[in-house]
Length: 157
Image (cartoon, rainbow, N blue to C red; front, side, top):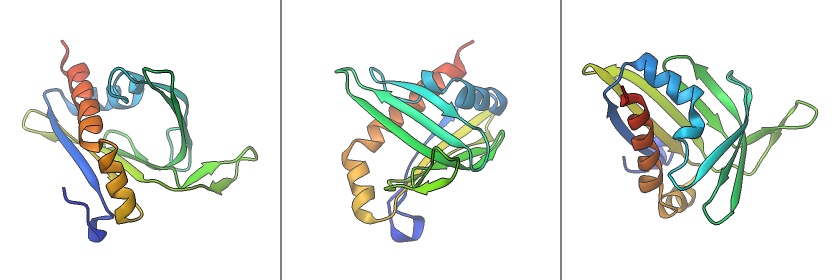
């Protein structure tokens, strides 16, 4: 997908996974630490409040000891279909939504297709420069590796 103003400066990847949607959803949401970061990176999920407005907090750990914390909120959680989150807001210590320096709105969704599941992950950005920065960071390779890791987990016997 080409990032344009009309599609929210979206970058997207998709995979067909040879597993039923129920299994893909379970692994997508309950085993995130196993597929969320491209190996050798790993993800540590501190908080996942699976509801619209709920907090999401993850720390990505790099192979050289670097840490990248990501705080945000879920905008939508539709079980068995999609979840959407953003880092444009965080939940403050008082439980109130606080504006943050936004990078993207992420959408992870699944749909039954051809005896398996179509998985699509999309990152929408505030402007062209941010979308290009994400592309330059290795969006295709990184998010593609995560999709491959998710597919491998789902397709195991």
